[in-house]
Image (cartoon, rainbow, N blue to C red; front, side, top):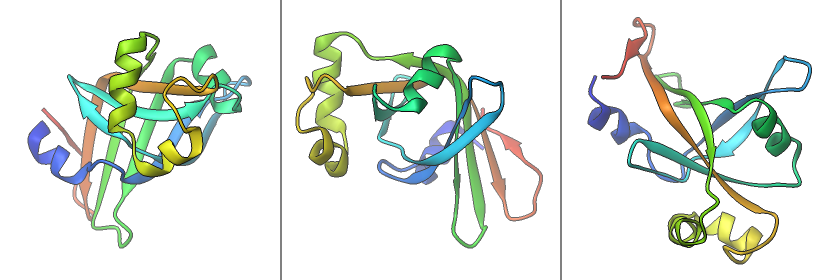
Length: 136
């Protein structure tokens, strides 16, 4: 499968499970919304007051998994976590955020609003019970 084919499934705003590493070294997963992809980075949003943000700062590796409700396919992204700090980049990213994110945080310069991304990503695709396929 190509990256372009993979991205037909990984649509902006799709919900999945975002996994991080807790302080005790154990994995933790929670529901999350994918925002968008650009320049081999995969963007998400959160608040810097949440436990997940502290986990990402302490262990900057994460995974995002999407499973079609009937199990027809599963998408997996695993990579290094980055943090958008540049004001201009944050403003531009804000423009691409989904309406629920904008509704919650109100403005790109909200002091608790953070934009994170996965980079150096390994992508995997599974269709039904077929073998896992790495995306090239």
